[in-house]
Amino acid sequence: MNIFFRELKANRKALIIWSVCMFLLILSGMGKYTAYSSGGGGSDVFEKMPYSLKALLGMGSFDVTTISGFFGMMFVYIELAVAIHAVLLGSGIIAKEERDKTTEFLMVKPVSRTKVITSKFFAAFVNVVIVNLISFISSLMMVNVYNKGEDITKNIAVFFVSMLIVQLVFLSLGAALASVMKKPKASGSAAAGILMGSFIVAKITDLTDKVNVINVFSPFKYFSYKDIVDGKGIDVTIVVLCIVLVAVFVSSTYLFYKNRDLKV
Image (cartoon, rainbow, N blue to C red; front, side):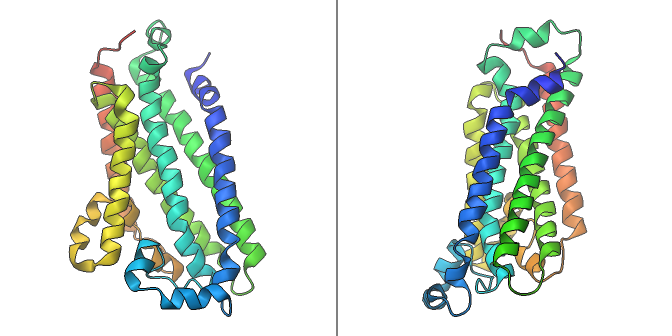
C-alpha cells in the first residue's frame, strides 16, 4: 500500500474526532456571544473585570461586545486546540513506527527513508489542512448566524491563514523532536509541553509589554490578532520567518530520521 494513503488511513479516526471536536468548540463558543453583545448581561460583567483577568482569558485587546472582537477572543482557543492536534500529529508520524512495532514494514519497502518521511509529511499536511478548513467553515457558519452587522468574512479568512502557518510550525516541530529524541515515544509529551510553554509565554506578554522580547518563543504571538480584527491583515515578514522556521524543523527531521537506528 502506498505510504501516503497508509498514513491517511492510520490517522482517519483521529481526524474525524478532531474535526467533530473543533465544530463543537466553535458551536459552543459562538453560542455565548449573545451574553457579551451590547446590552447583554455579560457585557456589564466584562466591563467590571480587571485588565489582568481579561488578558488571561484572551479578552484584553478586544471589544467582545462586537462580533469581530468576540471572534478574536475565541480564536485564541481555536488556535490552541488545532496547534495541539498539529504537534501531536507531527510527533506521531515519526514515533508511531517504533511505538506500534511497524518499523519492519518500512524497512522492507523498496523506498528510501527520504520518500518515507516525505509521504508522511504530505499526509500530515493534508490532515492539518482538513482540520483548518472544517474550523474555518464552521466559524463562517456560526458567525453568520449571530452577526447582525458588518461582514467579517475577510477577517476570518485572514485569521485562518495565520492559523495554518502556526499549525505547520507546530507540526514540523513535533516531527523534529520525534526524530531527534532517543526515545521517540516520549516526543508527544515533550512536544505538548513545549506548546503549552509557548502558550504560557503568550499569556505572560498579554499581561505586560515589558517582556515582549520573549514572544519569539511563542508562535501564538507571531501574528497580531488585534491587527487582524482591525482589518490590517498579517505581516508578510513574519510569514517568511515562519516558513524559514518550518524549513529548519523539516530539514532537521529528514537529517536525523535518515541517520537514526530504527528499532524493530
